[in-house]
Length: 501
Image (tube, rainbow, N blue to C red; front, side, top):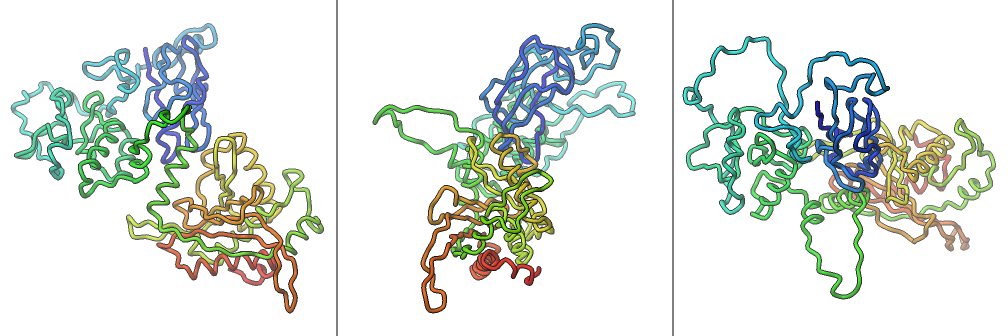
């Protein structure tokens, strides 16, 4: 029995990824749990396991291709919904089991005739205990139900006519349209559940789109992700009616037309890496939606660096082996105590619900430069850990990030971010907030500068710091106080013991 394996939900808000490796071949026999593909998604490489056992008869996904949640990956030939132990191991009998519901149960369609993109199917509800009806009344005897929330009319030129066979493919949900409306308006009114996968529904909620206004081109009128994107694009080109929100990121990255650069000389093209694509989308969205202000200051770290480099009183061993205490590890601790002292920076803004979310934990992300792009693993409960423990965790996370072994979960839940470019150079920069956080600390390279101490000038090691913050929640004076508190915490660490929360 053929079974189409699709890309499952891989995590919250993860909708797509790039195939970095196909671990099976056509004709191979796999068992439930065996790795089928490796997918790079949301800055991590995730293994996709086989949901059941069987023999691989067709592979749709290819290395380097971009796939979406719910998209068909490959087709398995199973026995009774799962390969028998004897088939997988080379002998034995097959136990009987009731056949599972597969896409071939769709009226007028078979799995073998579907393309990878058409392999999405409408969920089949479990049978109820009520006996089946003895007869089915003719369609004309059933009055059409009342339409649910008919959408606002849109210009006729915004949508192409809807094929009549699409509406006819799902007679159980089709109802009469209000007077003056026609199927050519690109509108589907449903009296029952809207035929769309959970990932499409989530995407529609994020875009502010009513799925009843979207024409589905999948089997049985099912709404695919491409249908939703096409709808948003047409509405955007038609003038963006009220009630539809199109993120500026998508319009900028997908709709920008570039000139033919080959007119002026030789050029080469390469695919945009998944990590770089995610970075571009998120930072562009933050830049265009968050009113960001950057505050600058300097901290005199002459004494701190002399103590750190001397190693006096600093243990080198921890539960994870030898540990090097870096300036970033010290900054982690100081920033964590600053977030406790100034709780307004340990929050997120939810304008959709007119709420400010205050966080009762302190998790801090650290930007790590890797061959595949910038990753931001998160260290948990920084305020409750010592500097030596933080240094060990930071070294471990940084190493695994460069080796692409950090998990998706280890890059979620941050309250604040530190980006340290001091090892590279520069006198300062303006970091972009890692939304939905409301602040980020940028660190440049320290340099010796003449500083007036008393009546004379002395060479001191000054560390340039830049704090970018969300002006919707944080005022300028609060940003200046927060950054000055960090500077003084680095200059006189013992004052942190006296300040308290």
